[in-house]
Length: 621
Image 1: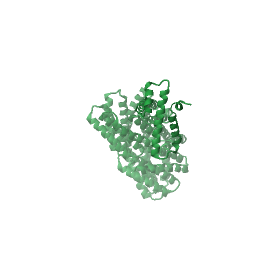
Image 2 (image 1 turned 180 degrees about the vertical axis):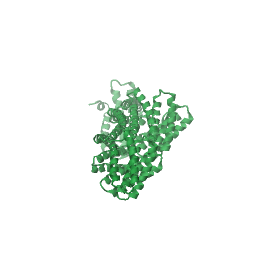
Image 3 (image 1 turned 90 degrees about the vertical axis):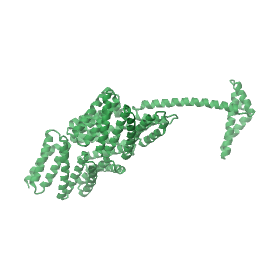
Image 4 (image 1 turned 180 degrees about the horizontal axis):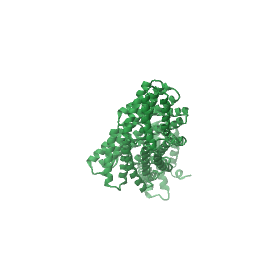
């Protein structure tokens, strides 16, 4: 017989009856009353057990006596005190657990993205999670490509921020940072308009803070960053003039800060970012020499930073970005060997980063970008097998990323770009059916993106490029009518883009390529007059571009090709002098590029082939 039965058989009996009948209580009020009685019985039983123990105090015994007399207050107060002690113990344990989870999350961050993300999710699930914990979670989710979840985390930060005990100025500064993070997500989701609104709201806050205290270097730094983000969206929307204005303002601030303290690595890095952005605009406007100067200045800063701390993954990544930008200019100028060297150095850095943390989606994407650039050079050098290998590795990475988050528009676009590159190789190898399959998959993705945001000029251009590639295959398969339809759709897009910004040299070149493709179809269909009009418009655009930058090998070879097209058109008519004139102009350009070793592997055959065509066409007229 246990102590309960010995001491208080009535209480034990009552408690047993309550427990046996518990399953039969259906009425809400009765159930609640029965619950109260059960808790009272358990409290009384606990008090009696404690009073009967060898360690019982006089106070314990008095509480039992009071209970028997109907006075519950002493026992209730004792239970409250026990509950308070347990609560303090649990809170202490909870605070310790929260701190340990934070430490684990911090240790994994930058080392293992997947485990860091899991740790931060555990942190915010605990009582006491702070606004900073939610912000860390949002950034980890954004890095992992979980964009919708990251946006929810940032919304939680906005909700908690007013309760943080900091000054009003600090609240505003943090709000500006948060708007940049949220704008970055909106941009990745393809909503450029909403992203620009978010970045401009952050910019407005930063400008107010700087006006309030122009000597605050942190706020100057924040303003510079906000201007960069606004410029990025303006550039993506095709407004190069506005983007250049934003980037120039950012550069001016960055240069002042960097001059103030050459040892401040954060300011030095910010200066390199501004230089990169200026270079991007100069490149888009066709000024390769100026762009190379900007990129080179940026590279010099980043090489110093990377040498200072080889373990700083952010600086290593920055260095790889600069190397790619330098390589892009070298490639555009026809120096494929130098470009391959730059791209290879970048690839080596990115492979190390990707191996360090396979869960870091940003580093995985970077690796795919470098593989694409290496493949581009291999293709230009005529090594199609090696190029296909590079493009295939890139495609495999991008398919995994795209499957992870179908709403991440950047990853979807990357996938379509890889499909186009694979298709280019398949087409060059003569497998038109496989190439058409790759181009069609790419086109389907681009059409969805272009429909999602008609104001995104990059996606509109992507769509037109895919239409051209589909048209090329249809033309090669002999379906001229369908090819003309694809080329016409592409031309309409390029004309809208070129009208939007006449200073965007890339779009002007795109327009010339579309006109040339239209002319090819018109010539093949026997409409020589229409073909002449298309080829002539294309040549006029290319002449302006070639005059703008004589060092741009691509633009020079484009102009030579326009003369070749016109030579072929006139050679088929009784226009011998015009045909010869265009052929000679094409040869002057090609011979110069050949002497400077700036022709690609495929283009190196052009001068001899053109001379043979001249001999046959002009001598037989």
